[in-house]
Structures are given as C-alpha cells and as structure tokens.
Length: 237
Ligand code: ADP
Ligand code: UDP
Image (cartoon, rainbow, N blue to C red; front, top):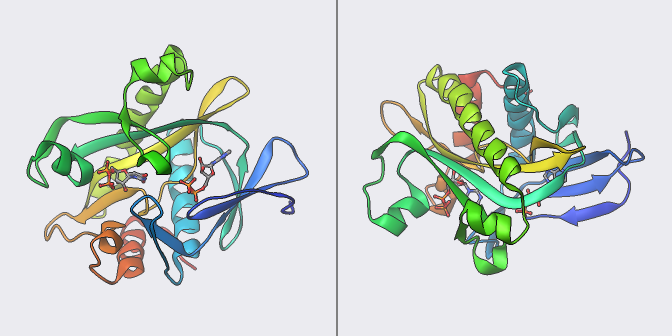
C-alpha cells in the first residue's frame, strides 16, 4: 500500500490517503511537542519506537476483543489503519493522580484513584484542550449518547488489559489518553497508544518513563520509552 495525498500533518504524525478509501497511512515522526504544540523538538528514534510500541499494544487490545483501527505495520515508522471519522474528544482514564488533575484539584501526585476516573477533553490546541463532559459532547454534536457510552466502556476495558500488561513488567500505568472514531457505524479505537499519550512509572522507584521526561526536561526521554518497551516485550528491531 502506497502513500498518496497528505491529508493532515499533526504534531507527531502525518496522515496520508491510500488508493483504498477506507484505509490511511500514519507516519510517526520524531517531532515531540508540549504545551499544545508551542514547544516542539526532534527526538531521535521516537517515530520508530512509538510505531513499534503502538503496533504491539494495538495487537494486545485486538487479542482482548477491542476493535481498533490497526491493520498492519508497513515500515519502521508507518502503519496502515482504517480511516475513521474521528470524534474530537480525548478520553482519559486515570489510576493515579498526575498532570492536569494535580494542577486542577491540588491533590498529591501519585494518589491512588479508586475506582479509576474517566474524563473527556475537547481536542482543540487553540483552546488548550479544555475539559468537557458527555452532555456538552452530545449538545455540540460531537457524538451521541450511545457512542459516548461505548467509548467509556472501551476505555475501561483498555485500562484493564493494559494495567495488567504493564504490571507484569513492574510498571505502573498511571493514566492514558485514547481517541475513538466511527468506522461503518461502529466505535473503533484510533490514533496511537505510546508513551507520548500515557504515564508510566517504575513500580518500585516511581521513575517516570513517559512523555513527562520531555515535559519536565528530565532528559533520556526515548531511553525511558525504550525501557518500557523492553520490559513489556515490544520488539524494537
Ligand atoms: P495532533 O492532531 O494532536 O497534532 P497527531 O500528530 O498524532 O496529533 O496527528 C494524528 C491525527 O490523525 C490526529 O488528529 C488523530 O485524531 C488522527 N487520526 C488518528 N487515527 C486516525 C484514523 N484511523 N482515521 C482518521 N484520523 C485519524
Ligand atoms: N494526553 C495526551 N494528549 C493530550 C493531553 C493529554 O496524550 O493532548 C495524555 C497525557 O500524556 C496523560 C493523560 O493524557 O497520559 C492525562 O493528561 P493530563 O490531563 O494530566 O494533561 P497534561 O498534564 O499531560 O497536560
């Protein structure tokens, strides 16, 4: 399958059409952004690491019966996916407090959230991805009630599958973001799952091994991603 017209250049990935109207190619670039795209740097190997990481996770989710857009890894930094009509809402599940939750509510980083929480954010960099809820998402016609219920159900299923996977590598899945879209009337998991869109800590030392290394200028960003990959069995070469 060959790349055709560039459809969209995002902050981390470029999206290409293919000769099949139902399929797209995502190209994972080395660009890394923070502050809603206001800070951008190139991190060597990131595109390749995230592409392989994402392929591994999407396969695990498919094995668990979760429908994803993943079709086939095409190269080191490209994946073939189903073309979804994306719902402009980011779904965030949290097992422990971190990031915007800590900033918003003043709770301590690392506080356990029992049961895990579920939040929605409107995907709009210019507005800083503001928090929204299901009522707003319905009234603003981003998704209907049944679709939102399915997104929530699938997000919690993803959490169950991945919490166990990371736990087996002596890692804590702190939180993560998912994006869903519609494919022939079905809600399907899209975008990516990689250390760019989740928080992962070492179980014992609580060392951060995700994009917070970039956000907080901790150094060794991709080394952190590779450490996680190695521990959960992602083939990196
Ligand atoms: P951003 O848009 O936040 O800068 P990326 O650089 O990751 O993010 O760009 C990838 C874009 O592709 C995102 O807007 C995402 O919603 C979209 N996307 C991901 N998977 C699919 C898919 N299967 N079909 C259509 N669009 C998708
Ligand atoms: N996240 C993301 N993209 C976003 C916002 C958040 O991938 O645009 C991820 C982030 O990496 C974390 C989770 O969603 O794993 C929760 O993010 P949070 O709301 O704490 O926001 P942040 O502090 O990252 O701005």
